[in-house]
Length: 127
Image 1: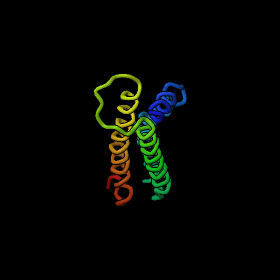
Image 2 (image 1 turned 45 degrees about the vertical axis):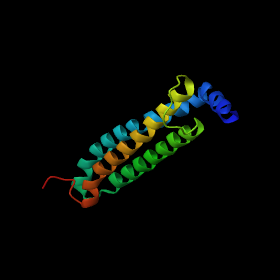
Image 3 (image 1 turned 90 degrees about the vertical axis):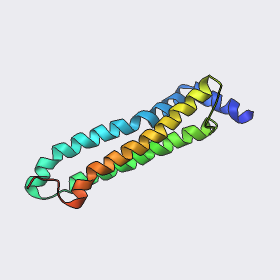
């Protein structure tokens, strides 16, 4: 009972709500920045043959996507780590957003890695 009271108090504060939204929205933002940055750097990289910048941007994006996963995971644990709930209110809603953040992080981590794959394989330029 005490854990639920602490969780309700945490997610009723602005900082708790902010962490929920960070866990959910960080991944699409990281993916969009990675996509645009790699796209902008690819012309220079293809001309010079140096793809180090693309690798660095993709690695940073993967690290941030994993950070988003851990934020969502911590939010889910803090909200009680229950899967189904017939109740309404702040805790089930917080759990839902946390689970959504976990699933979103899996999707965007996969997409970021898939966008990095041509650079890893050495074929990002048209030949």
